[in-house]
Length: 281
Ligand code: NAD
Image (cartoon, rainbow, N blue to C red; front, side):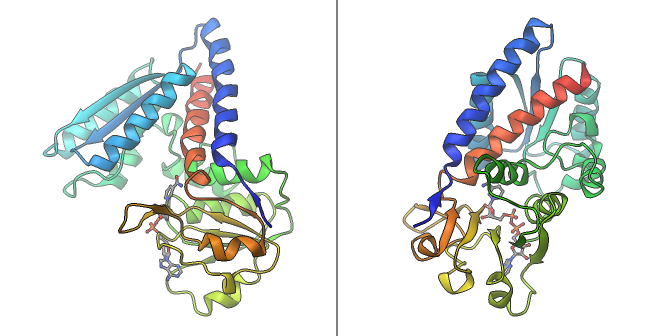
């Protein structure tokens, strides 16, 4: 039987620690503040933004939301980012994705001051991660590493196989694992003989976006299995990228969905905002 990695519990612990840290910062006249920009009215994004605002409230981080119309122009968006870059009271800027198709999200991410880039998407932060310098790390990968560390799961020397190569999860997570001295293999949609590779993993990460994609035949006995996927089934249930019931008996550690990686993402965002506030003081 695998040990279930309780992301909800780890995330709650991180938030409690941050709350204390923020109290201290406030005593010293530093008021961490996150600005969130949302363009258009995507209903899923609205839920994510609300959750971020709730987490900020709980910890004592100030929160300001900037809602822009669906027909916002490129110039209007860049102008707002520029304004927030220059506002001394704002430490972190987050542009909620997706944004309407007529806007270039990469251009917008690149316009955010990398010192306020609490999502870790700016090329300077991505580059610093690649060369192992202190930087803002994308929140979901940072959350995965934090979970492994909290459960004292060794990374060094292990073969980590990451399925997925997106810029927000697969690639930065692979880089984080490499920085922690794992031997990393990145698999993706064009990978041949996927099962042969995943079966070699001491640490197997699924970041694919396909419900129950990872089955027991793809997993080595006693592997650590991290499920980043969040998928909704037809009957409205949340499931991961891993077929949990089948894979769990083979694993030593496994993350559930929900309650695994998901809660860690916001906790790491909060960590990044506090880090930004300390850096900018
Ligand atoms: P994405 O669609 O950008 O990337 C998916 C990756 O999976 C791609 O790199 C692709 O090459 C790979 N892939 C697709 N089909 C494959 C196949 N048959 N075999 C091997 N690889 C395949 O997705 P993403 O943004 O990286 O997100 C991945 C999953 O993680 C989604 O379910 C998403 O909802 C979830 N997610 C969760 C969190 C969280 O907080 N827990 C955060 C971000 C994303």
